[in-house]
View 1: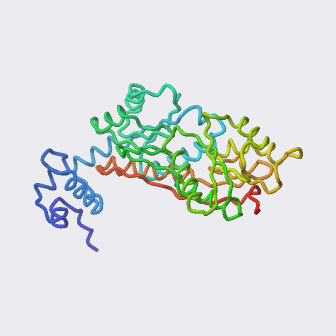
View 2: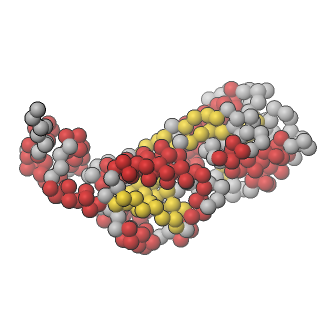
View 3: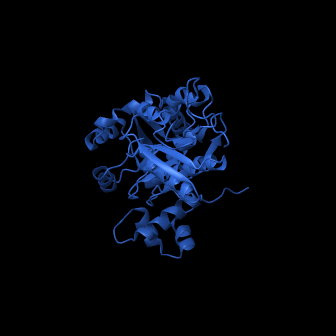
Length: 334
């Protein structure tokens, strides 16, 4: 049986209805070619499996990436969250033939110079930032230096760089709706306002409340009250609520003993639901009802997206990984 012929630039040109010269210039990223044409050519080249000698050499040299993971998150209660993400990144990198260098960094000390240094030390052609948001200077540099970058468990509202995150808006909407379906109409949402991903959870909560006649939502953020202070407020009856949706499992689990302890003044049907389904959620008594995030899928998706960019894709993409509800034992009907 004859071997299948390898696609060439003429094949790409024929499929797109452009000249071979246009294809050649687009693949070489020469000036004078529109972004739309360049994207179409590069996308068709990937679809047909086209690889020039120049591109094969570039791929060989560039199939190295560095992943920066915040040290505090990796060594705190969030360690299970980021461990799953790193496992997913490593598994997908192995499938893609990518050398992935995972490095812990102090998130409070992350600067553009530090990122440049980490990339140089790893001899990397791509960058993954786990739990670290992009800022103007970084986004501008990656575009100018043509360093592919993907935010992992993050998002860029300005759509300058690609990202992968759980479906925060819809997950929060589902969690709130679960409390509403149980009959609760006075619900508190404890939130953290610093990251765009967490603000999406607030939007999901507010949307579910707004769609339900008679429902009233109360917002408290971490700047206003620490977890123990909020728990004290709830036990003291300072909020007229029968349920709470907490922005992550760590804060939710810290409240469980006070809410469901023998001396709790709260009604037995008081409900609480978290987000992430961290390992501690299943260890808690009672078992926390929560929203499960597929952390390994986030890691896998981030590497797949980075590979696309390293292969020439220029369109900014925002990939969301679906979430599911975990029944648990902390949501009661009223």
